[in-house]
Length: 191
Image (cartoon, rainbow, N blue to C red; front, side):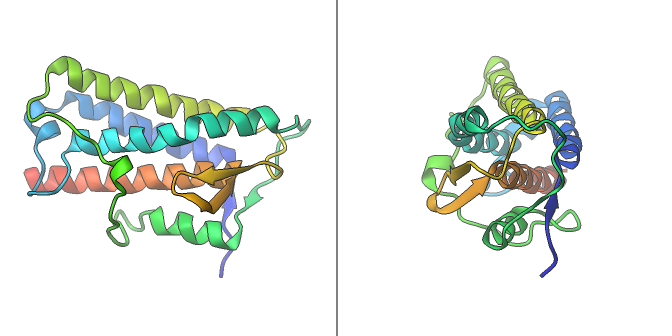
């Protein structure tokens, strides 16, 4: 099984592209943002809200892990993901602009919106995403000068999966990239 090497530079570049792509979606008509492609599917806005909901489960955990991590004078070498964590990460990461398989979302991660969204409500969804993923970017930057292989984070699904900071960042980024592909699929089906 090939190694998964993780670097903050690669993660930050990918996160910048992701945030730019989501930000550009604000230019779309309300109907494109709020219309699901089929019954029981999510609209673009619901996908973005899901990403925000999922990330909120990690904010305090990431902050605590960074606070516990000792300073490291030199830039960290690429981090080698552990086997189980690599499987979890690679299960999320899209390949060739495709989601590998669909997964059932746990209820606590599901977005709930009213049928009619105002411009202000839509703006709030984008603002929340931007604020949370800016936090992720800042955490990635802060981790560069930290000893990242000492503090573990329990995943949002519980202690069956734990991450070191770089693995956590990679999981969150791969999850968001997966849903960006879902957004593209949704927009293609609405065209």
